[in-house]
Amino acid sequence: MTMFLTFVISFLLDTDIHYKIRLTGLFIYFDVQVDQFSLIFYLLKIKEILRKPINFVVAKMSTDLGASFNEQYMNINTKMKKRFMRKPNVSEATNEFIALAIQCEHSDQPAFAGHAYVGAAKCEASVGHFLGEAEHFLAAARQFMKAEKKLKSLKFYSADRENLEAATGCYIQALNKYPDKSPIRTSILMELASDLVELNHKLEAAAYYEQALETVTETIMKTICLKNLLSLRIDSGKYDIALEIANKIVDGPNANVPEDVLAEVQVSRILLTLLVKPPEDSKPPSLKQLFIDLMNDNESDAIPLNTDLKLKLQSIIICHATGDTQPLISVSADTKQFLTLQQVELLHKLISDERG
Image 1 (cartoon, rainbow, N blue to C red):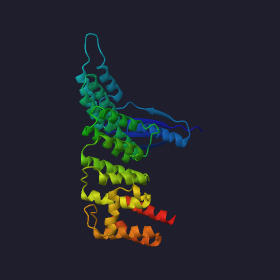
Image 2 (cartoon, rainbow, N blue to C red):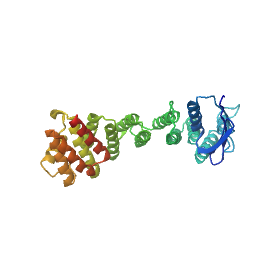
Image 3 (tube, rainbow, N blue to C red):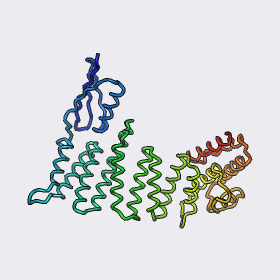
Image 4 (cartoon, one colour):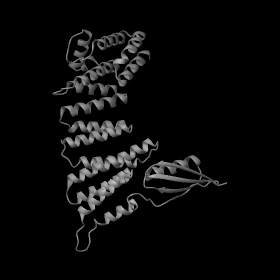
């Protein structure tokens, strides 16, 4: 018997979507909160699982917007068209796009809000208000990114990455309105990179952090950017590149790294050096001095570590140099309490390499 599913979907004021499913005479009701883009993935997923024809009917969207999004968007967009003997009312259209976007946000429809903000940005561009255009593109980017995160939380992923691509495009449009060395441009790049990390697109995030480094001029911001990039390179197993980045954090011009950050970076430098085993002549002077001061118990502002951690690191270095795997395992177990989770992973990798 051919199986048919009929979906009758009602968009209520609270954005609940009620599904009524008819399956060989059996009706099942369940509620979820999704936007229209997520709904498409629900339907495709069910079709893929059942491998059967699906019939579905979507009722007219009714939200607190008073009419469908498409209808309102087109009505506002019409105001931008030139009329005989009359210029388009750009200011009115801009305000209405913004109002529509805000209502979509309140209705938990971030993708629709993003499109409305893009409409407002285009209105601003048409009259040469480039800062207003950038502001609205940035608002659109954040809404599209919110929609992408929402999809991820629902365990749905789009091969075409519509929301993510729209968000990235809007971020790029926004930052291109600012001068090359503008702090706002740097902040936008770092915000985009941070969102990509949250969505587990770490290679893409690293590329935007690297772009941010080309524009950043403020020392603290540069340190934050380098530290984030260091973390991404360690996560991706690029230990040689990670060591170079860690060296830059310590050796950078006018480096004034906070003590807690410096301590974390120095420990990572030690572990990365043991893993990468760079030639002696390629090590920067500060890295050579780090090992000398550590192994000789020299007091130095460059090693703001407590005594217990220094002793543990000395033991790890000696065990690694002698190739004693079992003592290395024992020392590592006592050292973990002083390390970050990422540094613990580096230590595990070091032990694994010694065994292998």
